[in-house]
Image 1 (cartoon, rainbow, N blue to C red):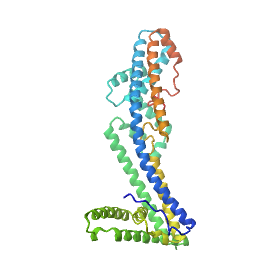
Image 2: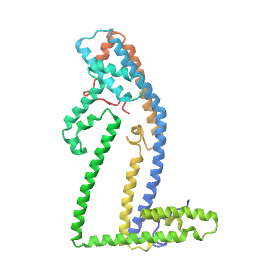
Image 3: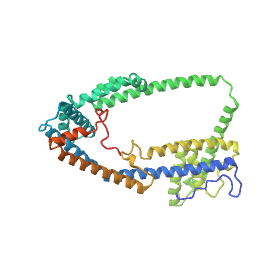
Image 4: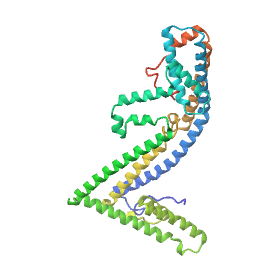
Length: 383
């Protein structure tokens, strides 16, 4: 269907009221937001693909260069001598760098993962897995009972299943189910109490007004539905193409009616019967206010959906490089790849420099360890 939607209440030559204008503006915004969602979903998918094509190879080369540096440092430390203080910092550097690398390759089929885990044990004096457990324990001690109060289970229970993905998944599913059931029971009990209170309480003017508006909405929705059925039911058609066209239209109409989606029914009515005055033109401002509120809720929902389909940490690893303007997105991606390649060159220069004792000492001296260098999963490159 490629008809133009006529978003007007009342005849074209009629002066619209403030409420009717507001109603029309909301319909326009809803229509535009739906189109924006479709476009943003496509833009995000395309941006993800384009960014990955440029950045992923650079990330791979960067990781390989970083790994080569770690292997080179492990070799030269056996040749060159450092003071106790320098060696202690060297071990901290190796631990921090190895945690960074293992945070990126652990669990993958990277051929060097076992080598780097052995090196981690050599310089950290504990296995990488034990360090992960230790960190989780420290986090649990810091947060105290906050985790349990927020998620409904103890951190120690989570730790027992940490190394088995299937057990972890089953554990989380069970805890989420228990939490959901408890919340549902609590909500149901609260709703029953509220319903009981409401049943024994006389309705005020606002409640009566709301019920009347809801009744009017239900009535108007049914009117729109019957209007569409009357005009597009295929039973009376003889032409095969018209039968197929009207059958497709009726499938949309019935689906919208079953979902109680009056906005969709209204759009269908306005689109398919564009030269006719629609059902809302007969409503006065008081009746129209309730429909306006529903449109506002619909617009808020669509805005939230727009945020969800826009590049974000959950749907695009390159979201930080995103920009509304295509040329700027491209520039940011190219700069990020260039910075990664520049860092590759720095790794290569460092490998060459640490081959001498003085170069190794200078590297250790100038290496800026983060305060919490032993936290795993530090991003290897901040876009």
